[in-house]
Amino acid sequence: MKYIAPIFVSVAIVLAAYIAGNFYLKRATPPGVIAVTGSGSEDFTSDLIVWEGTFSQTSMQLQAAFERLNDDKETVRQYLISKGIDEKNIVFNSVQTTELREAQYQNGNYVGEIFKGYQLQQTVKIESTDVPMVEKVSREITELLQKGVQFNSTPPRYYYTKLSDLKIQMIQAATEDARIRAEKIAENSGSELGSLRSADLGVFQIIGQNSGESFTWGGAYNTADKKKTASVTMRLEFEID
Image (tube, rainbow, N blue to C red; front, side):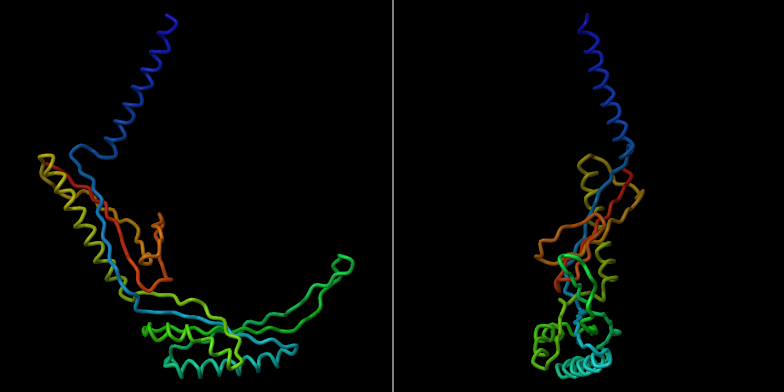
């Protein structure tokens, strides 16, 4: 008799789990409903490039640093124009000023700071639909070093100006893919596909082609690669007759 109680308890646990699981399945997919997920994807090449670089000057005198930086600005502007960049696409941001100070120690103890001068920095930004030309300039920008300009370049960022149209195409493709899947399931089960009950759009994913990137729950938006792949999912629920 002492073994009967544990057996009843085990059976009760299994039965409860079965009932709970069956209840969840019924709630997740009500009777007479097919839930399917379709996907749509598209490869595309970016048609807009954004590229930035920073140049700087340092001096003990603020005015001297500013004058040198202004000379560098003109050198950068003329260089970019000579490379074919339209002047209207060249944007210089405001000058950033930093006081350079060096900490001083005696016998390992901090005793104060020494003023080392002013560092002025300015960023130039290029935004253009002529992607190949700006790419070429970004690779050759080290030529400014020969002109005495301390220029630091950042990697270009790539965008697509027709993204809204592309999203519509992908949604249509994902919806059609889901509908075809639902029709196939209904056909295999001897039923007919009824009216659409609901449609839920998933997140958009834009990753670089051959980049090894992974999809994320919140959606990926790659700007590092010129060639990209965009994708989206669509979850549809249909009634079945």
